[in-house]
Length: 114
Image 1 (cartoon, helix red, strand yellow):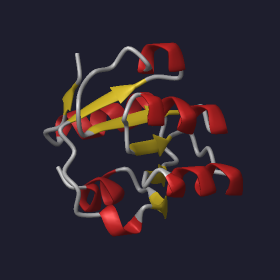
Image 2 (cartoon, rainbow, N blue to C red):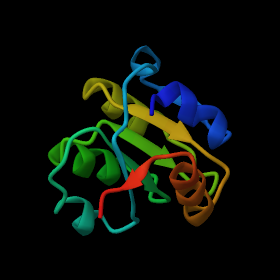
Image 3 (spheres, helix red, strand yellow):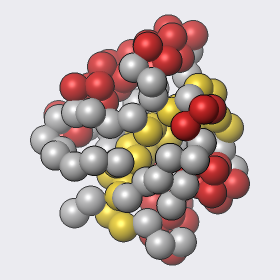
Image 4 (spheres, helix red, strand yellow):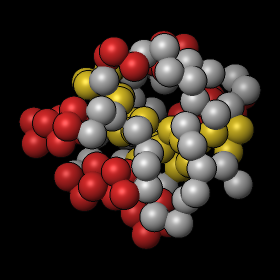
């Protein structure tokens, strides 16, 4: 599923990475535990998280994750956006809970990583 399709499904706002809007997502992983994110070994993962801080971006970069949705109406700071842009990441902000966002994506054909 392309990022451009995910945006309206999650009523999301894209805050950086607009040029990658046609990228294809294969799987979704939902977590606020960055230690769990570090265990991932897959490509084209969309990370759903409510942990909106610089550590999330650094962890995603180490796990080679380029697509992040901040759920629960969390907002990316300028520092987060700048670091995400340096690593060519896509950052979305959604008002939905992690559970609801996960369910919507699953109902529309995106599979969980596990």
